Length: 625
Image (cartoon, helix red, strand yellow):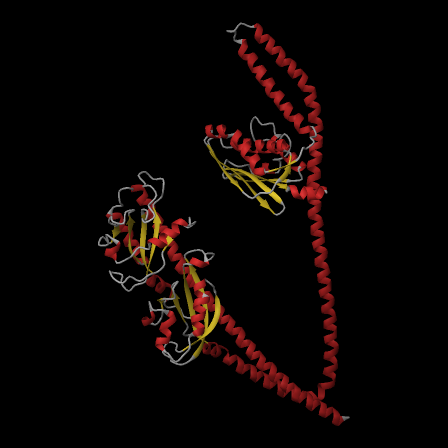
């Protein structure tokens, strides 16, 4: 038995050596993979920082160009003064603006440019990209600044330098602004000629990844705008490497540039290179890259971007982890020696103990996991139930409030209406019996008018308290919106209120009572106009959201105080001096009767938006069937 135990122990020791060695090797491989990934991630952070710095540089130039455009628009048709262009150029030349000015509509006219020697594109040695600019104008860009693709003039003061033109048309609507330019002309525009190579160098030069890793920047055609090797600057990245070391295949880096970098992707990868700084040999490099967008990345067919790359040899990663791996193997060796000495004495006991302990741990862990899952499920059920309870309670309180107020209001309306009509009738009779020049006729007119106003209020109370049977029909909600807006068109013109309809053209039919929903629109639009006595902007929109139609009415009036928002749909609550407080309550009830929802959002000083949702006609027909 002792012999068998020794043989078993020896076999286990050999197996332990194999296991420890395999684990140590695997751990070193995993450590290298983790460190490599972390190294590449740090490189990606650096490329993203360089790309962000370049974009912020361009954003500053966008602001400066906008300022120049607005100034030129204010002085148009006169050109900005030389002093103004000189002072602006003195500021922006440190931002690598080579030239600036105003390009006229007629290409034969002289440029109002600085330095003053550049009075034409030809004198500058620059061929303005008319076709590219026209495509940008025709696309109706959301961006107000035009960025040309980088190009390298063959002559003039900028010959051999990769430059980029930024342009912004002068603001339209100014006095003297010409008619839209002909298709072969550039409209009056402020422009910068920017040194793309110096901009790239400012933010890429001096950045080091690891010990020797360096960045580079390419344009949308793959030409280097910056490289640590001076003879690479301005050269084609697809060919210049092969010219440096033709014995190496650069297929992988060329594939990455064409299929990933020039398509605006961001990420990490690797490639084979033939040198690094002063070392000339075949080596593997870790590689990170980030884009610098000048047009949106959604326009893949006409994408305008630069790309920042950063590369470092993999040997630098091995140099970082080599001491750790050596210590790891040393610890593994010590562990094996200790295990050999203790194995024959602790083998059986430790095996049994480890087995029992592992089983207990697994059982406890499994039990804890199940308990946690059950607790999470119960918590979610409780939260859902509480939410449903709160919503139900709110609707119940609102319904009870409407019912109680409606019963009282109906009774009061009935009791008041008859005496009120008698008062108005008697006042009218007395008025007719008086002489036309009698001073009492004006007082009787006030009595009649106030009686009429109270009678109208009682009608609103009656309409609110009386149950209505809906006469639903399938309707195009946009038509109903347009009809209602036409009612207020004269009133809006008189009150200097501009309105904008943001209506979705592909809305399906909605099942509704036209008169009742029209009453909602009348109430909401009337409230918005009353909130803008000095004029403003009224916006009405519609769109489909899942299985419902969303409609909103928005104004830019003074807004509703936050403390009054919770009672905004309550009967008889109003923020107006002469309001009845029933308009929004009636609207709320109508939307509820249509199985819809209505909400209000308001910000003091910014305006108010009422939004309500109505179900689609097809959904209602499906439920009824």
